Image 1 (cartoon, rainbow, N blue to C red):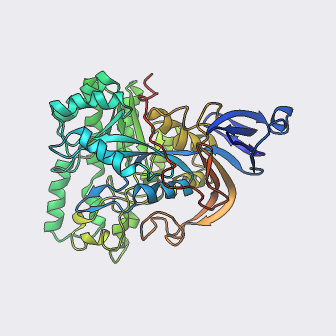
Image 2 (image 1 turned 180 degrees about the horizontal axis):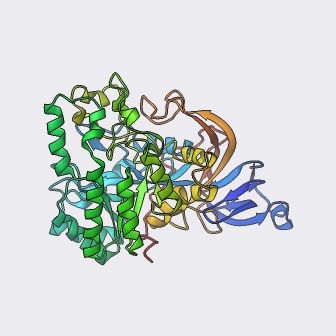
Length: 466
C-alpha cells in the first residue's frame, strides 16, 4: 500500500489547530505527529507533500446537491461526472445528492435511478438523501428499508404544489415514520399554496421580470412554513433539518425551537450569505441567473444568517447546487418569471467563499471547518470517516493556500454552466491539492482524478441525535 506524508502545514479541524504532519496509508489517515519530532521524521513515504505555509483541512462535505435533476421541463446542467469534478476543484470530497421519488412510483425506483446515474461517474465519494414526493402507506414502509441500507434522510416539500408538495397530514405521517426508524426529515419550508396565489396575481398584473420571483416568495411565508414544520415535528417526536434557510424570521423560528431543546437544525447556503435581491433585480433578464428557491433576500438578512452560523442556530452551509445555463435554460422564463428553472451553481466555490468569510471576520477558521466539513458529516451519519483529520478517517484532505488570490469567473470555473453567480468576485484563499481516500485528485491546481474513483458511501443516522 502506498504511503503519503503531508508535512509542514497547519492542520485545522472543527476542534483543533495544530502544526502537524499527517501520515496516509491505504486510503486512510494513519497518524498525526508534531512537525519536526522524531515520530514524524521516522515516517517513510512513497510521496511527500510539502504544506509549509498552508492549511491542511478535511475535504468538504456538501450535504445538498442536485446533479442531473429534472426540473420544469429541463435538467440540471451538471452530470455526476462534471459536478463531482468541479466539487473536487473546490476542495469538496463528498456530496450527498437527492434521489427523487416520482408520484405514483416507489422510493426504490427513484433510488435505483440515482444509483444508475452516479455509478462509475463520480470523481469523489457520494451518498444519497431521498425526496418523498408521494407519501402513502407503501412509501412510508419503504422508508424503514432505506434507513437500513444507509439512506437515512428524507426530504419533503411544503412548496411546489403539483410537483413535490406534501400536505400537513402527509408530512406528519412521514415524520412519525422517521421518529420510529431514526431517519432525519429535511424540509423545504415555504408555503407553496399561498406562493402560487401570489405568482398568479403578479403575472396577471404584468410583473414578469426575475425580481418578482423574490417578491412573491415572501419572508413571512418561509417563516410560517418553518414554524409549521417545527410544530409538526414536535407532535411527531421527530428531528427536523430545515434546508436553505434564507431569511431572518426563519432563523428566529429555528432558534426558538432549539432554545426549547427540540432536535431542530438549520442549513444555509453561500448565495444567501453573499448575494441578495440586488442580483435578482439586475437588468436585461440577468436576474434570472439568481433565481432559486428559497429566493435571495434583501442584504439586511445576511447579518442574521452569519450570526446564526456563529452561535450555532444554523449548523451547516451546503450549496443546493442545481445549475441551469442562462442560455437555453434560464431563458425559458423570459416574459414569465415562474418558468425560470429554480437553481444556481455553487458546488465549486463553497469552501473558498467560506474562507473569505474567515478573512472578513464573520467566522473563525475552526468554525469554517465545522460548518463545511464536520457538521454536515455528523448531520448525515458520515463522521468520523468524513469531516475530520484523525487516525482512522478517510484520507480526504485539502492543502489550502490561505494567501493565494483568485477571481471567480465562468471563464475559469469547472461547473458545466455558462455563467458564474460570483462573476468578478475577488477571493483570498485557494485549494492547491486534494486527496480523496488518499488518491491525489487535484495536484497543485491540476486535475489528476478520474470518473469512477468516487465511491458510494452508505450513511448512519444523524449523529447529533445519539
